[in-house]
Image 1: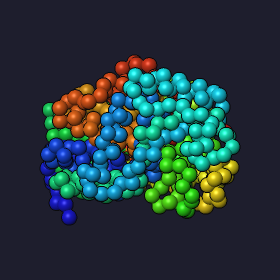
Image 2: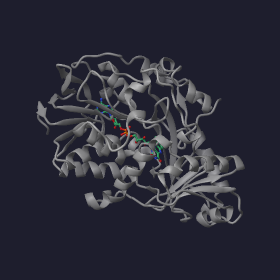
Image 3: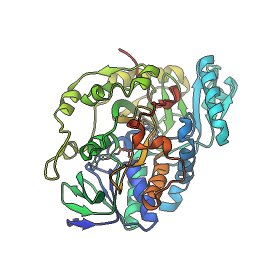
Image 4: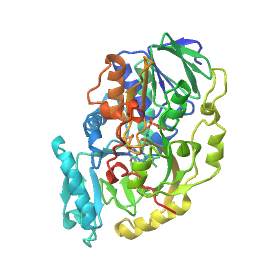
Length: 440
Ligand SMILES: Cc1cc2nc3c(=O)[nH]c(=O)nc-3n(C[C@H](O)[C@H](O)[C@H](O)COP(=O)(O)OP(=O)(O)OC[C@H]3O[C@@H](n4cnc5c(N)ncnc54)[C@H](O)[C@@H]3O)c2cc1C
């Protein structure tokens, strides 16, 4: 049982992939680190995602970081001595139309300077990759060096590695606010007591803007609910992470598949949506959207914008964001998958779930310090592709906290881009490969 008050060098808020990977890299450097998690390790996005770890289709601004991320992912199992379900099976984006192929060619042009191993497959090569026989597809974009891991296994395993290196992971321990002295961080106040520290990394997923807003550093961050399911064991037709408009799938260690669809996202209208509507206009112009007004709006309307250290906060009132899956969408994806991939046979659903994806207006993350509060750093806003980027995030944030610099150019990811008058630059379709919104 942890005894408060406590002390360490760095407190990380949130035990998702961003927070745990950051803590792991800091602990590897010998920095004393504590992770505070309001619920359980990887309880939110980081255990609910599809498990794609990919360079393919990325916004070009993210490519240097994702290259670093994959380099780390591929050696995690060896370093921590635990199975995380890592497998290098590649990414395969299927083209149904000539326009899809043209889009993938265009992305290849952006990716060329980075010398990735991505290329276009012919219809016959696609059939060979997925065990099809009908030349149904016009072709595909393929990156053999991309991989996958089992999300529910990976982050808890790395959290155990943090603890073996001397770090601490506290669950059911929401951070309410931070303490400051002379314009810099001096500690955090949790629901259980205080921890003094030199630096804080806010890796609070969809909660990061609410938390930072109380400190005076809010930013636009919305949530999209995405539903997904896993199947009972099915024939192995491809080791690649396969994406198509109707259904996308990846092989699981248990012999089934995780199946979802780009475009299955539902945007629950929240008070934040109204506040940030203007900032999201460029994204809204490139993406049709499916909007829903429901109880989430009224729940979030009740949340305070500002609170004190001794107030009970929304973080401890919602231990784990666990939204219900949209079963109509799940059944539609199941039907599409059976139609598009008959080689899978009858697809039986073993379990369905959903997760809230946090999205920035330009769909790239925030990896940043903040002006006016030394020692406070933010790693969030992964916009539907932060699992794969998790290992890179750990590297970037650990360097930023300890050296004040990072192995990649962080200018596109600075927090101040949302407030310094910079235009919102959005890499159209490819920024939303895991989800897309549509009008109803
Ligand atoms: C259905 C779905 C499919 C996806 N597919 C992919 C994919 O294939 N590949 C990919 O790369 N990405 C994918 N993603 C996105 C990916 O899961 C996320 O980008 C990533 O997990 C974000 O990690 P995180 O650590 O930032 O956030 P989270 O995993 O959400 O973790 C944040 C943590 O912070 C905690 N927290 C918040 N506030 C506080 C507080 N005040 N005190 C203490 N703790 C706090 C929360 O409880 C939470 O556990 C998908 C997401 C979903 C939902």
